[in-house]
Image (cartoon, rainbow, N blue to C red; front, side):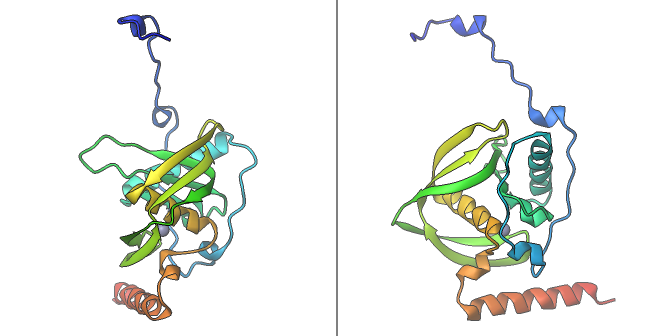
Length: 195
Ligand SMILES: [Zn+2]
């Protein structure tokens, strides 16, 4: 179709944000060693209103934390749903809602990012992952999408997808590093609980 100047005026894009239609809730985030974080999450059979609400509540929870990605098991729901938004604080929000996400291709080229996780609070470590991935998923309308991701976006998608298989970023580290982080986490929890 030719791009006719002014044509768009006859077909105004009606956009009503889902956020404005559904009130959202901030959910409690589970912290390791909660057993739900180690479970394999089940696929979603149908993207219905329950899932749309879950996606929106997860986004609200992620923004409030704040974080750049969140998987359903982190809010106690063992189902294959993730949300992410890697937009910087001074950029407009760019949320992605993914149901039943699957990596259908990963590059041989690797990338290293210092990762953290809302379920492993205040602990960070370098993790090596494929630099680029292609992901297939259902969006919040149940439509199949296929996107190519590179750099930080690819890393966040892989980190969140790991959660759906019961894997935390610390599971990618040597056992020495993992135990060091878990010890630090246990100590900060004990300090926080101290009167
Ligand atoms: Zn995480």
